[in-house]
Amino acid sequence: MVNGHRGTAAPSLLNLRTFLVITGTSQGYGACLAQMLAPRLPPGSTCLLLSRNPDKVADLQAPHVRVYKEKLDQGNLAECSKSMFQALLDKNRVRLGEFQQVMVIHNAGVCGDLTKYTWQMDDAGRLGTGGHHVV
Image (cartoon, rainbow, N blue to C red; front, side, top):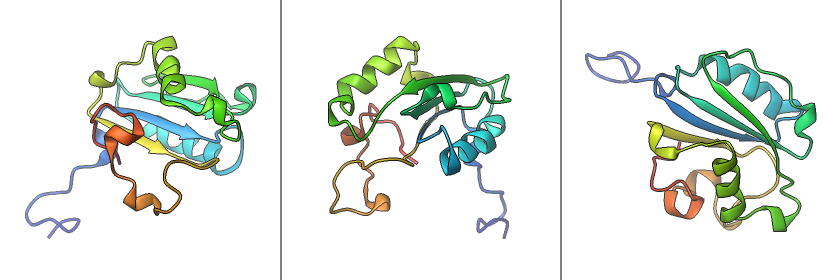
């Protein structure tokens, strides 16, 4: 048994062409996640780094990955809408159909139904991912 699978190695999430969204990336845990994950993604992947202060988001050393830094203050509900997120995708010419998976690491503010735990939030349509697999 290899990695819990009989006869074959488990596929790595980091081997799939990924659209990675991380919130709270200007410092702390969010910044660390961005620095650690972006270089490990395969060519053709894209990272969208969101924070209240995008000027403070460190440059990533991942030349094979497109990286965009955008302002998003999740404390301001007027900024937190599906249409606003779609505008960020459009601005950066991100097309979700180009990716094999979408990963959202929500590291700041509050997202979705507060009566659910994170692992219960698996409705891709509700998260605005266009039906893509949500990791």
